[in-house]
Structure formats: structure tokens, C-alpha cells
Length: 210
Image (cartoon, rainbow, N blue to C red; front, side):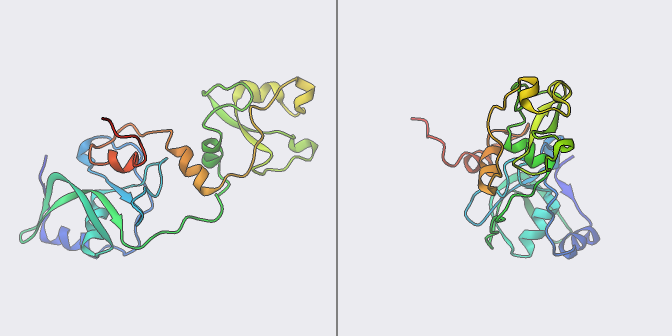
């Protein structure tokens, strides 16, 4: 299937696509044929660990031609036009530093990530949903401090009652996480596919083997 072969029209389309970079990361590429590029911030750290910050090879090639990124590593595979050939980037670094957000978005995914995709009542990791510690029927609000990851059985057991009524306990007190805390938590969940050229950048602070 490789190398990729592009017509002149295809190549022009790649280089003329909208200049807004894609923020749709690929978490688990179906195969190596997808050739995603690991995207690093200007400080050489991934923009995101979970989902892992990856771009399609088309977006990586486009960003390279726009001089918005530096290519650190490449696949052995190439894309060609009648006049140009380029190896597909496997690791790219943004030239402009993207500042982390000051506050973490309150989303279902980030809530699960904060709690390690673990029920905060029994510690199980399957059939995950979320629960209001103080039930909404009793004035509980939908906030970081009052919502936790919960398995369905615990959620049903607790229902609209307070913890004391059902003799249940939280594994840890829920709190608002910082973006850096979510980033660090994401490092505990490696994707299904890790290209060999990514490893040094994903585990940049790991101990070296003697």
C-alpha cells in the first residue's frame, strides 16, 4: 500500500487546506498505515497524554510545509507528487508554545480521568457512570466537588440518598483538578499503539536503563 502516491491536485489540496490545525486527536490508530504524528508542544512535551495528541499524516505534512512545526522523527514511508517527495513525520514539535488552559473543562471525560476511570465507592473499573455525592434532589450541585465516577451498581445502590444513609464511603474527596493534574493522570493510560519513535518523548522523565 505504501509509499503513498498523490497527484499534483491532491498535493496542492494538502498544502492549501484551512490553516487552523486539527484538534481531533487519534487515540488508537487502526493500523500503522494511518501513520499518525505525535504532536509535542514547544517544550517537547505532548499536548495531551489521554487521549494522546496525534495528528493525521495529512495534517502533519501540511503543518510542515507551513513551517509551523519542526519534524523530529519520520516514518520510512513517503508521500509523493510528480515533483516532490517527503517522508511522513512521526514526531513533530510546535514552533509556538501552546499555553495550558488555566482551568480544566468540566466534562464527563475529564471527570472520569480525574478519578482514574475508577468507581469512587467500590474501586471497580467497569460499567462507569457518574454520581452526585449530595443528590440533586437534596440540593446537590453538578460541580467538580460534588460529582464522582461511579459504577452502575453503586449508583443504583446509593440512589437519591446521602452516603450515611446507605453506609457508603468515598475513596477520596472530590476536588477541582488543575489542567496539569489531568495531564499527569493521563500518563497512566498508554494508548493501544505506540510507535517506537514516540517512546522517548512520552516517557521523558523515566529512569534510563543501565
